[in-house]
Length: 399
Ligand SMILES: *Cc1c(COP(=O)(O)O)cnc(C)c1O
Image: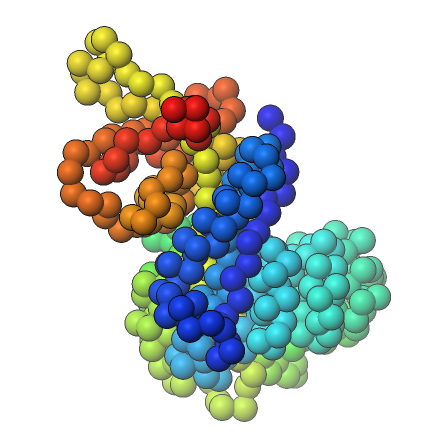
């Protein structure tokens, strides 16, 4: 089974010049409209082109998140973490909003440079880099980079001697969806040795960074990390280095954003003078809510005899699964809540991946949802209910 890169339909933020009916649609209705339009297009041009799942990105949502960022963290410059989602329309839109970019590989640096972003708006935030990526970054003029171990410093000295270094310190929110502390981050008792080596090698330290882990809802992990960064700043100053940049990383969780950022503002205010530059590396905060995935039911297994009697839900097989865009079901045990695309106006046998509205009350139809591979681990949803019965596209078409 081969998965091609999934295509994206793009909804641009509404302008004053947009048609009136269009401006009156809610963001969810706009997404539905884009899905309907795409499906209608696929139907017109033969079923094959409609066989792959596709994303709809609502760039208006990216814009709303950016406004929310600026309201809550007005003094923190966001560097969007490209690894989260490197879809070209999103990168282009963020470039237009003047955010910076956090890249972790040559491919990511290239995709951002290709959007016309200046190298000084890019941060190479991978603490353990290959030599070739250092050479690439140096050539492209992307000089700001992170490190967290002593050997990396020798490699930087050899391949990117003009680097502007951020020491990545250990931070961890145990309750985060994806903790990163086990992989990266210098422990506080190694900070002195690392900074001494920076000085010995004649390298340039510009600041300190951390990442508390993806999906962090615990303000105290940010506060602890900011305190630890303060400690690293002091250590650096004692060695005669002059750090000026504090990078508070990513991990901003949507639901707790206002609460977390209020604690962050307080922690920064009490630990740092106003003279420093503060940056962050949000990923999901910008990308997650903006994307909707539309899938098609390709086949259905109706339970019969004893399975039906035991109440085992009918099984739907769709055109995307855990080896495609639903990797998070396995990696993060994410529970997907599908809804029918097209809304109540034109119920269609397609599924999206986010929480939905209720169809008309009535009979409830229960389903489990599976991906297209023959691997039994390829299950997207254990059990879900709809208020209407679902059919695969072709079954319905031939009715
Ligand atoms: C993954 C990652 C991010 C983004 O994390 P989110 O939780 O998506 O905000 C930022 N910086 C680094 C170094 C990362 O590895």
